[in-house]
Structures are given as C-alpha cells and as structure tokens.
Image (tube, rainbow, N blue to C red):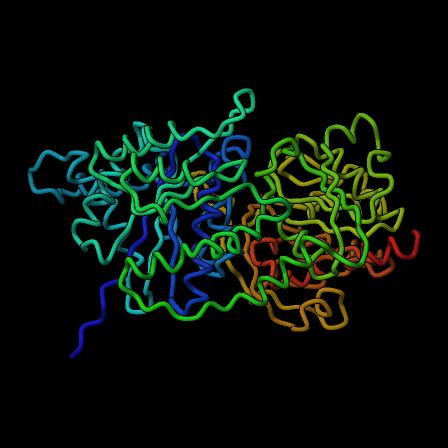
Length: 541
Ligand code: GLN
C-alpha cells in the first residue's frame, strides 16, 4: 500500500519585538496555501505558564477566543479561522502551563519509570507531541506559530523542540520562517537591518537558520537592505520578503504576500506541486473593504476594555464584516461604560447602532444598562452579546416590567429579582479555568423572529462562554411585556436569544456570534445589525 506523504510543517518564529502580527501572517500564508489546493492546519504555541488564556484579564492578553470544541484560546486563532478559514480545536493552542501540567501529571503517575524529568528531553518531547497532534491523513501542511520573541528565556524549549522536529522530518518536510522587525529610524531617514541580524543570530545559536525572512517595516526596503539581510542572515535573496504596514485593511496582507510569491517558495521548498492560485473573491472583498460605495455608518461599542483594541478583537472584525456586506465604511465609536455612568447617554448621540459585548464583573454595568435604555427608547439598532444580552434583559425587567432592582446574581447575589442567575450546573463549580459553559451548542429558533429571518434557518450552532443565564422563572413576566424569546438551546430550556418586536432592530444573544464571522461571509446577525444601522442612517433617524 502506498504510504501517505509525510505531513509538511512550517514553523513561524518572531524576532526583535512582539506584536508584529505573527498570527495575521501565519493565517495569510495558510490562506494562500489553501487557495493553492492544500489542506492546512494552524497552531499557536504560547510560552506562558497559564494553562490557557481563559483566566487572564483582557488587559493582559486581549480577547479569549473560543473554539467549537470549547477551548479558551489565544486570539490569533481568530485570525486562523477568519482569514484562512481553517477550523481550530483544542490542539490548535498549547501553552507552557499545559505542556508542564501534562508532564508533571505523567510523572506523578509514575510514567517516567524512575528517570529524572527534565526540560530536555521531556518538555521538548511534549512540545513535539503537541505539534504532531495536528498531523493526519486529512492534512497536507501544518503551520505552527511560536508565541513570543527569539531571545525570550521562556521561548527556548519551543525553539529547541522545533529544531529537533525539523531534524526528525527532514528539510524537504519542514521549514522555518522568521518574522522580524526592520525599523525605519526617522531622525536618520534610514532603514536598519541590525536588529533582525541579531535576532537571526539568536536563532542560529540554537541551531535554527530561517529559510524565509519576513520583514515587518513601515517603509519599503531597497535592494541593498534585502541583500544585506540575505548575506548576514544566510537566507536566499529572494526569500527576504517584506511585509510593509498595510494602508487600509488587514485583509490586504495575503495579497501583499502573494505578490511576492511567498506561497510558491514555500511549496517549492517543501517539494509540493505549485497549483494555480485562486483569490478573486478575496480581492473583490478587499476592494469593498478599502473603498465602500454605499456611504458610512457609526456604531458604538460600549465596554470596559475600550482602550485596548485586542480586547474585543473578534467583535470589531465581525462589525467590519457586516460593513463589507453592506458596502459601507464603518466608524466604530469605542465608549467606556464607566464614562456613560458619569456623562450619560449623550456619549451615544449620533450613532446608528449600539453594541454591548461580553464581559465579567460589576464594573461598568450601570453604564451598559444606560446604553441599553438609550438604544431601546431612542429606537437605535441594538446588539447585545452574552453579557450584553444579560444587560438587555435586566434593563427590560427594570424599566419596562417595573421589577425594581432586577439584576444578575453575578452583580447582586441578594437581588429581589434575579432575572439572570447562575446556571444550575455551575453551582457546584469551584475551579476557574475551562469550567464555564464553553463551545458550540445547537440553538433552535422560533419562526417569525428577527433571528430566524437573519439565519434563514431554524437550527443553528453557536459558541458559548458564560456561567449565568436567563432565569426561566421570569419568562412570563418578561414575555408578557413584549420580550421575545427567539432562540433556545436544543434539549435544554436555556434562553439563547431575546428580541424586541416594536423596535427597528433589537437582538441579544447569550452566545458569541463574532467567533463565526468571516470577511467573505459576515455572520448573519452582524450583517443584519449593520444593515439596520445603515437603514437608520438613511431614514435620518
Ligand atoms: N459574565 C457573564 C456570565 O458569565 C457573561 C459572560 C460573557 O459575556 N462572556 O454569564
């Protein structure tokens, strides 16, 4: 029987500084390889000690991205799913904490048979097993992104592991890409290659010579810069690729890399046939994102991590997808919930849509409730997601149903009207990480609702990350005053979607639709929320 060719591996490391967009670059390369006919998977290895990012504050880490199978993961997985269209799972993200937990658990079970357990080989072997976990008959190329920067102490075991891995599979089956910064020094008017030379030097000391250098830069590099980097970093001249800051949209990055044939070089080095590249739909989408034809729209996002763009990454992306679908320019007004508490709803004047994203804890709740009231009373399209839906229910209970002090028991455990309450199965949970209601569940939609019209289906799957839920004891009180329960979990009486009928567009959902939105196919709820906002503007409301 013919043996299936070995899965090919691409390892992406980062140099000089963090935040160069390694996730975006990895996802863009994956898209190109997919569009050349290959089956690609992506993975992120994070060198920190938390077992997963689920317990970290968004201020530390940005958004926690949730996979279909319920893993709480790094936000780069959002790029993988949105841009490359690759479905991720819990093997798509490992952290040092997870690797060590597995090794220590095995040691306690006597799994190392009397040996001294060490970083090398036991931790590096465990990292290699994590990489191998994505191999399979249904995949051609695995792209593994190493978090952090070459030179970080905590990255060392990862670099050693990928060095060994490539040694094991051979050059024709694995390659190294180093994403590095080539800064432009304004005062000197010069581009500098030295930091990248040093970063590659660090990789070389542990035995990795990058095959491809991708240089993040503000300005285009001259030929001499590329030649210098090629010479001192031991890389072929044509494999010094530049990734200059894109002018308008991050979705330009794959096109920029394709122009420089990165995907062709990768396939040639991996001994894979270079099939034709099909990117017409992507190009059209980028064209719309860059120069929309149908005007603009202003949407407020009311949250408590507003100063940090990464905290609501998927939400902002999904709103942009909605704007692409409506062919409009999107202006996002980021409003700090605490500021609404101080200055009132005037901070929301002039927007055509208000979105409240997910969140935890009491801080900012009063401002969010005020934002819901503003949207409901002034008939501005409203979209509440997870905590945003819970706020919509609380506001409705207080101000429409007259349930004074209605609240979630997350914020007031002794409230007289707990319209949002801890889920039954959460009551015995004491551990924090990975213990919420997580991942994809089936939701059944009621016909003749906004949600059903948006989805064009009565059965959908959506991802969750929460502990609290709509309290069914208040079903009659709230629906009696006009709250529509538009979606419920299949097989369990959990309310998943609420709506208002007598309003231009008012929807709250307990799940996170933003995780399933892509630039080529906006999530139906985001698409229709933005559409409602565009109509609002056209109507001059
Ligand atoms: N804090 C709320 C809960 O746990 C909402 C969670 C969220 O918005 N992701 O139910």
